[in-house]
Structure formats: structure tokens, C-alpha cells
Amino acid sequence: MGDTDDTTRFLEGVGINVAGSIVINAGTNLIKYGGRCKILGYVMFGVGNVATFYSFSFAPQSVLAAISAVQFISNVFFSFCLFGERPTWRVWLGTLVIILGNVLIVLASPGKAADVSASDLLKLFWHGTFRRAFDWGLYSGFIVLNLVFGGLYKVSALPFRLCKWPKIA
Image 1 (cartoon, rainbow, N blue to C red):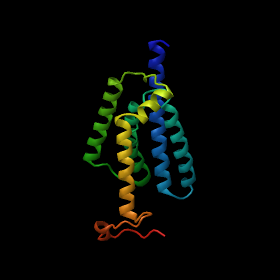
Image 2: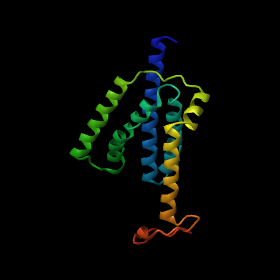
Image 3: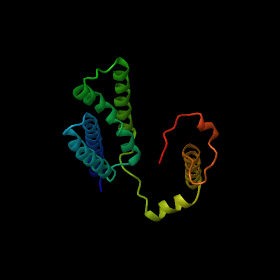
Image 4: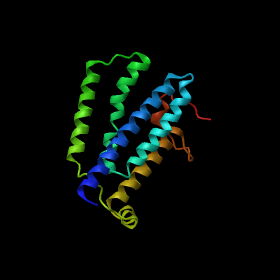
């Protein structure tokens, strides 16, 4: 593939990701709006997620994940249109920062993903720093869940007993 084809695929991925993120946010707001719009909201949410997932085959995921922040920009628009929420100056400032950040991410990205085979990914997963970080995160998650919700072993959750946590049946 030539550079033009790679650039075209990259831009297609960015476009599909942005569109998918906006459709997800529109769907979420329609679900929140309720009534008959709720069903349309669920459909839009599903379609947007499929589009976002599909976009990952066109461009590096590290770029597209950051670009998905466009949903916060679209939320300003949808919140105003559906719920009449007027954006404050802080919201406008945050929106500007997101836009500038996304432009910088697209301009600074390499424009194509690295070619890595499945066996390369398995080697990276089973050996090295990633596996230690993965294990640490997994164990930490189990400990927190166990402390907060009592878990399978009924570990004492003394610090959390002072909080008003909902009872789970």
C-alpha cells in the first residue's frame, strides 16, 4: 500500500470513529430523554458502538480512543437541544481544549498502525511488564470488589461499613 492509501484509510477511520462517537452520545441522550425516543436511543447507541469498533480496523487505536472524546463536545449540543441546558464558560473552555487536543493527536500520529501478529501479541501478554501490570490490576480489582461488596469470602470491610452502600440481594 502506498502512503496515499494509508492516509486515506487513516482519515476514514477517524471519520467513522467521530461519527460513531456522536451517534453513541445522541443515543445516550435519547435514552435519558425517555418516552418513545428511548427505543431509538438504544438503536443509535448500538449502531454507534459498532461503527466505533469498526473504525479501529482503519487507524491506530491509541489515536481513535483519544478522538472518541468528541462525545463530550456533542453532549454540549445534545444537552442544549433536548434538555435546554445552557453551557457555561467552563464548558466552552473544556470543549475548546478537547478540540485542540484532538487536532494535535491527529496531526502528531504516525498515520498507520504497526503490523503485529497474533503470536507477537501473545508473547507481549504472557511475558514482561504488561503481564505484571495486568495481574496487579486484576488482583486489585478483586480486592476492591471483595471489600466493597463482601465478595465470596466475606472479607471484613470495616472502612466501608461507615458508608451507606446499597444492599445487594
